[in-house]
Length: 121
Image (cartoon, rainbow, N blue to C red; front, side):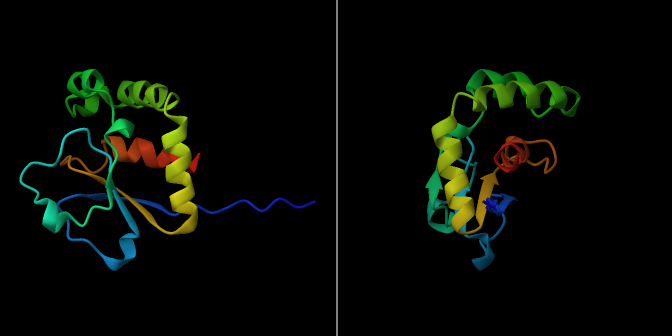
């Protein structure tokens, strides 16, 4: 019996960038709503705060690239306790593109990068 592995289409994008028809499901993965972004213009399908890093971890990290490696490890540990949300996001990504939206300025050191990698692992 051959088991077919489902390909997941998971993308990341700053919430401030204009929506695209190629984004698929646009899910905000920040704990706090992006400053200055109007809900009417965001085209966000869902806001899943519970998949974002905890407030304590977010404050400790402070978007300091020096703390990136430790942040990734701690955030991955938090995500292990959110299996139901991860399963839901994988289901969406298996059916259509999934775009994880974040507000951080740093496009390489933010929670959406870690979350995408966890979903694709």
